[in-house]
Image 1 (tube, rainbow, N blue to C red):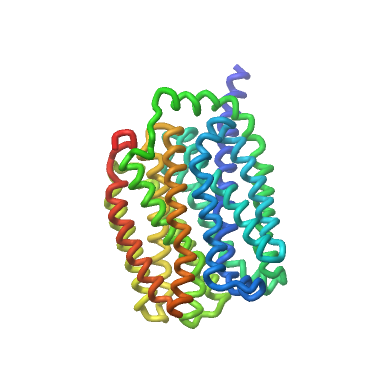
Image 2: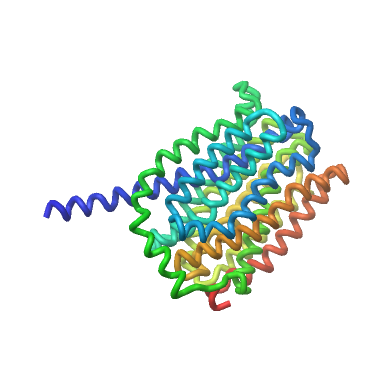
Length: 402
C-alpha cells in the first residue's frame, strides 16, 4: 500500500518538474533574440555596421533555424528529445558568451551558434508537449508560449537600461542571458531519466505511420503560415524601435514600446491555443489574426503619433494570434509526436528561411529609400498572404491526408 502511495505522489512531482523545465527552456528561446533590436543603434555605432548588416544580426539565427530544423527530428529519434534539448542548452550558453565578446566576428559567430541551439528546442518542445500532454496540448502550448514571449518582452525592455544606465554596454546587456541558460541546464538535467522510458514511444510510429510531410499540400500551408508570421515578428523585433525613433520617440522609450508590444501578446498566447484546440477548424481565428495585423500596420503608417501605443498593442495582439496558431498547427494537423516533429522541422526550416529575408530586406529598403513606408507596405502584403495560406492550414485535416 505504501509503495502505491509513493508512486502516486512521485507522478505529479515528475510532471511538475517537466512543466517547470518546459517553462524555463521556453524563456530562453526569444530573449537572446529580442534583446538585440533596442541595442541596434549602439551596436551599429561601435562595430560600424550599416542598417543592412545590422539586420543580419537578426537574420543569422533565422538561417540557423532553417539549416538545422530538418535534421532535428532525426536527431531527436536517435538520441532522445531530452538529451538533444540538454545539448542545445549547452550550445546556447556558449553562443551567448561568444556573441558578447567585442567585435563583429564574435557577434555573428555567437549569434549563429545560439541560433542552432534555439532551433533544436523550437522543433522538439512542441513535439515533447504532444507526446507527454496529449490531452492538454492547448493549455501546455499556451504555457510554453507565455514563458517564451514574457521573457522576450522583458529582454526588449531592459536591454537599453542595462547597457546605458547599468554600465554593461551592449555586450553585457546581451551576455546577461547566459545566466538564464545555465539555470535551464541545471533544471533540465533530471529529465534525462525519462530518456529510456520514452525511447520506444518516440521510435515506434516511424515504422508504422511514416508520412513524407514534404509531399503534403497541407504541410506546405502550415509551413508558409509559420514562415510569414515569423517574418512579420522578426522584422518588428529588429526594426520597430528604429521606426519609432524616426517617429520622434527616444531610443530608451522605443525599447519599452517594443516590450509593450510583446506584453500585449501574452494573454492571447495562452487563450488562442486553448480555443484553437477546441475547434475543428481554426479559420475564424485566422481571419481575426489578419484583421489585427492589417489594422496595427496601417496605424503605424497613417495613425497619429499621439495614439501610436494603441497601434503597437493591436499589432502585438495580432502577432500573438499568429504565433499561437502556428504552434498549434504542428499538433492539430498531425497524429503523433514523431509526425509533429517532422512537420515542425519542415515548417521551421522553410518558414525561417523565408523569415530570414525579412530583417535584411527591410534594412536594405530603408537604406535605399531613406523611409520606413516601403517596409511597412511589405508587412501589409505579408498579412494578406498570411490570410491566404492560413485559411488552408486551418482545415480540419491531417498532413497524411493532404
